[in-house]
Each structure stands twice: as structure tokens, then as C-alpha cells.
Length: 211
Ligand code: ADP
Ligand code: AMP
Image 1: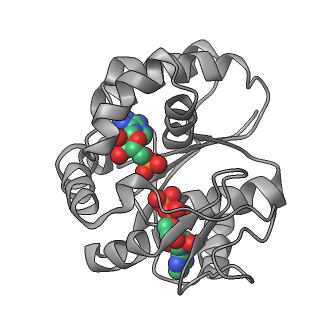
Image 2 (image 1 turned 135 degrees about the horizontal axis):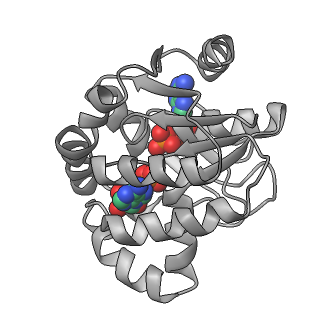
Image 3 (image 1 turned 90 degrees about the vertical axis):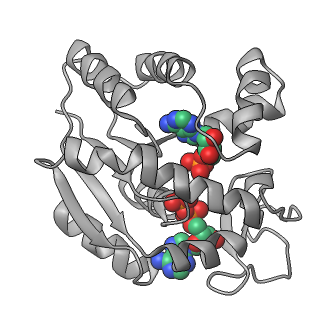
């Protein structure tokens, strides 16, 4: 049966970085609700226009919008090994996912919890740079591009995400602790904890060993 993995953890924990590695090396498909929403914002679709207000403030986008977009996405992904990155983020989202997976004959194989202190998250998010063209993720100190502020993969100038500004980072961390961390208890029987402060290769090895 196809694998279904959830990456749970605060913003900046390295979920996207690890999803990318599992995608390149192991053929997983990454479903990042954050990426899907940013794409919608860029193309100014009705979803993007609605979502932007919440994203700019570091708040969660309403569950109904997120659940609809996941339901649509799952239709395209029969027989694929999936990583949900940044979804679910609330109990209603987790409940909806449970129902959707049952309909597709899938089950959750593991919920990988990324453990990292808030201070480290702040440093990671403040230094994060992303490629607006191919989505590659860098860090000015921990994972700098070869050429200053230019994407190694496609040569596009890198940008800082609007929500990686200091005030918004603080809000996003609060939202994680208030609304998303309850999922640690919700998924307690499937959780595997990973030390996310290690370097990306070590984190990758740990994740592979538990999958
Ligand atoms: P998330 O998807 O959980 O929000 P990202 O994968 O985008 O997190 O990582 C946040 C920032 O931290 C990025 O700048 C990334 O380059 C950097 N980063 C990711 N994993 C590590 C790691 N293991 N060690 C140091 N920096 C990391
Ligand atoms: P991320 O890229 O995962 O850090 O998400 C960026 C922003 O998109 C979040 O701060 C939320 O505003 C929104 N978002 C992403 N995923 C979800 C989700 N599952 N539920 C609600 N909002 C989300």
C-alpha cells in the first residue's frame, strides 16, 4: 500500500527541507499547504485572495478552505507515497483528513514530530531565503547558496518570504503552540519524535530509519 506520512512541527523546523530530500531521493510526493497557498496568492485565485489576509498576519487560513484544497489534491495522488507538510494544523483538519484517507483506502503510517526550541526557529526563519521560481529553500548562514542571494538550481534571485519578518514569526510560533501542538496528543499513537536541531543529513537519516 502507498505510504502516508505527516510532518508535524513549528514553522522553520525543517519540514520543507526534509520533504524535498525525500522527494528527490525516495520518490515521495510533498503536499505542502503553505506552498499551495502561496501559489494561489501569486496567481490571485479566489482562494489566494482570501488566504492572503490570514497569511500576512501569521494566522491560520480557515479550515474549510484548507480541507477543500486537500480533498482536491488527494484525487490526483492515487498510488503515490505522500508527505503532508504543514497539514493538518488543527483538530478539525485532522478529523477531515482521517475521513478523506478512509475513502481512498489509505492510512497514516507515521506522524513525524520535529523537535526544536523556539529560539532556534526564530534564527532559522529570520535567515531563510527562498527561490520564487523553483521553490528551493536556503539559509543565509546554515545553507547559503553558492552565489550570494542567487538560486543554485535555476539562477533566480532569492527572496525573503513576507511572513518571515520578525513580528509575523512571533505570531506564527504562538499560533503553533496554541492551535497546532494539540495534534501531538491527537496523534500520540503514531508519533515518532525527531531531533530537528541536527544537520539536515542527520535529520534525514533519522527520518529514514523510522519510516
Ligand atoms: P519548515 O518547512 O518547517 O518551515 P524549512 O525547511 O523551510 O522549515 O527550514 C527553515 C529554515 O531553516 C530554512 O532557511 C532552511 O534552510 C533551514 N534549515 C532547515 N533544516 C535545517 C537544519 N537541519 N539545520 C540548519 N538549518 C536548517
Ligand atoms: P507554511 O509554509 O507551512 O509555514 O505556511 C505558511 C502560512 O500558510 C501559515 O502561516 C498559514 O497562514 C497558512 N497555512 C499553511 N498551511 C495551513 C494549514 N494546514 N491550515 C491553515 N493555514 C495554513
